Amino acid sequence: MTLASESPLRRALYRALHDPLTGLANRGLLMDQLTQALSRAARAQRRPGSVAVLFLDLDRFKLVNDSLGHAAGDDLLVEVARRLERVMRSADTVARLGGDEFVVLAEDVAGVDEAFSLARRLRDAIAVPIPVGAGQRVVVTASVGIALSATEPGLPVNPSALLWDADVAMYRAKDAGRDQIQLFEDGFRADSVGRFRSEAMLRHALDHDGLRLHYQPLVDLRTGTLTGAEALVRLEDRDGALVLPADFIPVAEETGLVVPLGAWVVAEAAAQAAAWQELQPVDAPPMTISINLSGRQLRTPGFAFEVGRAIARSGADPSHLCFEVTENTLLDAGGESLATLQGLKDLGVGLAIDDFGTGHSSLTWLRRVPADFLKVDKTFVGGVGSHPDDTAIVRAVLDLGRALGLTTVAEGVETPKQLEALRDLGCDWAQGYHLARPGPAETVTRLIKDDVRW
Ligand code: C2E
Ligand code: CA
Ligand code: CA
Image (cartoon, rainbow, N blue to C red):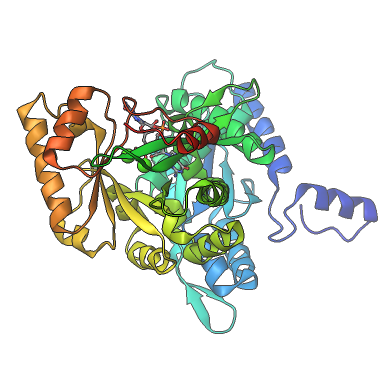
């Protein structure tokens, strides 16, 4: 449909079916065309797989928007739209679903190879540098997911399921390192149902105060006193049951929802730290409240600044807060993450290297991270004091931590025997079910008030 000037009615119809920025089909029109394409293919008894849905998502579009401004971002989207249209035949549908997500619907493709070659042509068209704003040019890449209509004859095809499959394949392409093309495979389906459920649950929780923070006490092994607590996020589902992070943090990272989630965690934990600060006797050593970070948060421009603002609002002393990052988080966040960590340090907070021993970091790299704490992963703590190999590893990690001037923390302490061995090895702090399980803030408040010792 071209921009109709004939009548107000046609204009209204056009607006209802098109994306105002690019003039491409919107989601509604796409679904309509997809439904028709699938029924045409079924009627004509075309080979299965003849309808292809290609889901494109620009890589790092947010960076363009944040660094060059929204006007430049809009220019870029419009140009990408024009280029996609040029590659496609006029019978095909090119749609924008919002943000930097585009979908191409191709009817009558000859199979997987043709779908891939189409995806490559789309990608190549986008890859040519795009002028935005005054004299600037940017190079963008896209991650592409492909889904083909039923690969077996006679199977009904559901249009939304096909779009969803292409979306899931696109996420796989992003995971594989961006600028990739990925065909949907049946094996993804089980994952995608789970992913879909947790994403819906997470969005609901974010919109309806459904997040909770639990805290797990940290114990100083020399004095046996409470020395801090790790904030661990939980999600309360519609039935009031608590969901553990393993079931929603991966999706939160994939979708970027970990950014608002993380902001909530920082504000909540900092407010709690301020409240506990008040409660403590003036001469007591400060408690350290630790907060877990994901790579996505570290990559968010201005992250350290936002954290600084949140801490200032909470009234907490920054030195009572500590941010935990794993080796893999840092690798995932890329080169700028060291600058972000330094930005956090400059706020006066502590830094911990989490799950140490499970990642792929080199010692040279470890020295460059401005950390204060080294947390020995629970997989090694499991065998400490009973398995010579684990004991040797823990001893070596503790030595390394000491050599670098870090406070060492053992995670996942579940037995008195492990605790004993860790004390003997000179580990500074410990955390684990044997000492205390994670629980609501009030349980830690009780421990402070009762001055509990271990
Ligand atoms: P983590 O940072 O390694 O956190 C410690 C996990 O070990 C927690 O699981 C804790 O409940 C569990 N744990 C504590 N003591 C023991 C023990 O003695 N034995 C065993 N087997 N486990 C123990 P949880 O709460 O399920 O958290 C899992 C992971 O989710 C965390 O691992 C962390 O990576 C992530 N996470 C939690 N909260 C947040 C958050 O606010 N933001 C982000 N980005 N990630 C979070
Ligand atoms: Ca942690
Ligand atoms: Ca950990």
